[in-house]
Image 1 (tube, rainbow, N blue to C red):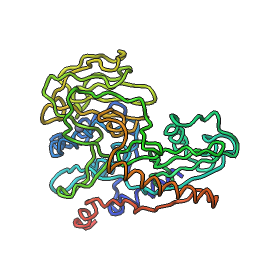
Image 2 (image 1 turned 90 degrees about the horizontal axis):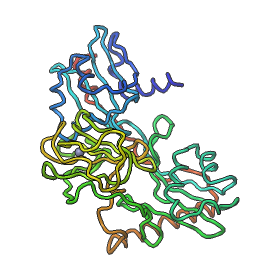
Image 3 (image 1 turned 120 degrees about the horizontal axis):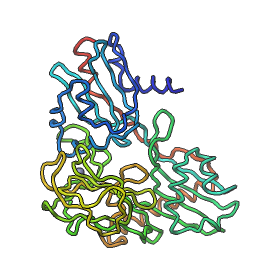
Image 4 (image 1 turned 180 degrees about the vertical axis):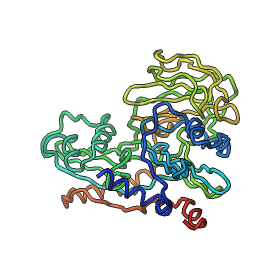
Amino acid sequence: MKSLRLCLYLLTFLVIPLSLNGAKVHHLKWEKGLDFESYLERYGVPETLIDTLDREDMELISEIIDNRYYYEMIATNGVLLQSLIPIGEEMQFHLFMTSKGYKLEIIPIAYKNDTYITQLSVKNSPNFDIIKTVKNRKLANEFLRVLKDSVNFESVQKGDKLAIVYDQKMRLGQPIGMPDIKVAMMEICGSKHYVFKHTDQRYYDEEGKELIKRYMRKPLNHIRITSHFTHRRYHPIQKRWKAHLGTDFGARSGTPIFAVAKGKVIFSGWKGGYGKVIKIQHDDGYVSLYAHQSRLKVKKGEFVSKGDVIGFVGSTGRSTGPHLHFGIYKNGRAIDPMRVVKFKTEGLWGSEKRAFIKRKKIYKSIISKIIEENRPSYIWNRMDESCVNPKMKSYYKNLGW
Ligand SMILES: [Zn+2]
């Protein structure tokens, strides 16, 4: 199975290069603690290559995950021809050799992303039945999480119904990453409890009241966003893919940085593109990250309270000016910090509320219909497969390979 998957993967990415005489493709795990600079050095790739990236991309070199699989193609003489190194769930570094030396770019990892609808009658428990029916443990976890503040799961009985509308990324027939729940409904003794995800990525009840009550505080007193979070986007002017796994705040050097919630410091020190950085482990699988600091004030292993000063804004690492790169991870996955940090007043108002009500009505009628028809899980909306066409193809073609 593993070799089949590998073949499929290679067919997707490396069709042309595979015909290279004698070159070997390796499927390897990223060594724990290996930094990207050392990796380049290993193959004699000049470290200055990193300087060809822009500021946001440079930060991504600190997002390479230990023990994640990556691909390397090595020529018979030991020269590195290309590597595909994942960053987060959606993007990867593509390092490749050209006649003008090595090039480095960021490209998406190929996957399909479809919208699914699932509905079922509880036989055992919502958790057990979702896993059994859909074979997606993360979906079961997310379902319980988004409804935990509005439903008492202990009162669920056999025959109660549930429904979920969600987006799921799939690669080679397997779900990858977290499912993105748009609507979750749990009916208990005939009364339906809904949560809806709005375009601001937050969850609301039917009345447009926000559901997550516990927020993290702001990491700085005065917030000026200079760069937003994005898993991946295509930059139409630069004509290339980009990702930014955190939010950047502009601030003067020396501005105090606060812990956004109580927790334990799990990293305090230097990390590649992030420079002087602190990571704090919080409850419920959340980790916060504060990068490019001028001075760190807490050490690994220390416990901090919400609002404690943990360090000061700086420009260390790969940074062009003083700012705070602030990241939030949920179970190891980078999420948009704006989703969990309190920046604005709660609730929806005006045109935003009207848009919410409109979407809510559509979703509710879809869910009523599938429950009425008792349809099993199915794909509701099939989106286009994200396709990757590395410039490698034309490059190797030009060389007659
Ligand atoms: Zn940043």
